[in-house]
Amino acid sequence: MFERWPEDLPELAQRHVDNSSRSRFSTRVEIYRRLYRARDYIDSCSDRKLLLKDMAAIAGLSPHHFLRLFKQAFQATPRQYLIHRRLARAQELLRNTDLEVSQICFEVGFESASSFSTLFRRRLGASPLQFRQTVRR
Image 1 (cartoon, helix red, strand yellow):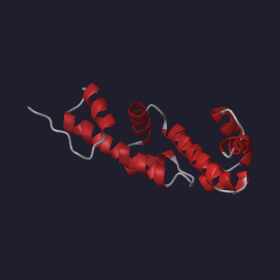
Image 2 (cartoon, one colour):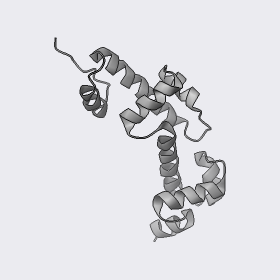
Image 3 (cartoon, rainbow, N blue to C red):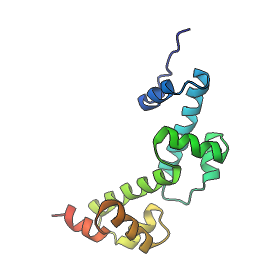
């Protein structure tokens, strides 16, 4: 039987679903649609406190299965993905606004300016202030 891709499923998911043959094709497609729905939710609400159980509920999966399947699909846990999105937004704000670092920290969803700065430095190799000075030269 010929299996046809729904047009709204991203190419990455299409390749990954092809490699995962433990369940029926239609089941795999539905799981990826749910995971992408949850990822879109994370993208749109990344400035808020997000809980695993809420993300899993958006996907219609248990927290355990959501965590496992999300990591399998996107090569990152939901928390890692959320942090990545927050740091990307912080870089954009540092580059394009004159907001103070502490304001940016809270604007993107971090709860502590010190943990934000530490994480920013660890991931990007420079403090938020150093990053701002470098990109504005």
